Length: 194
Image (cartoon, rainbow, N blue to C red):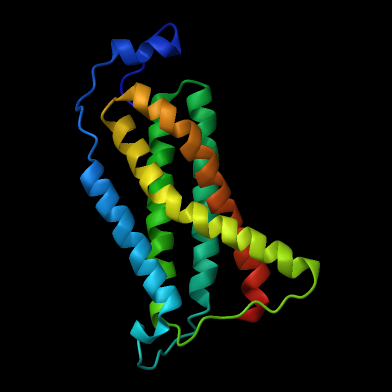
């Protein structure tokens, strides 16, 4: 994500010196584990959530989740287009925007599951129920996986470790696009049951 070099894009990693060769693996893995454990605890152990009364309609929080996921998807798509056009500066800005909306999503998601007295149940029937659970399960598994992938991709891009960045970004981008888009789909399918 550093200064753009002319010529063959595969030679960029040879022409741009990394600002760091560190992987930051310890920090990234710790953050990833903590984030996923907190989400799992709030989702599967509602007894640790908030026990007091809430003076507002908390079902607005899943709507915010969907809005933030929508923006993340748009920013990622724009970042992908920018890098295809070799506009590294614009790519970097859209990636920062995607991380920002993802962080806002995380705040509203955790807040909802902390404040909610119980987890809502999906009420659809028939084939739509199977489709919902397929989307939900793949979304959830890939959402857990995207945390370390996105962090490694960001760090390696930011530190100009471009060979590593490109290699992992080929996996990170499609998975993150899938997670952000299916987050919206899950909300739309679940909205009538909140």
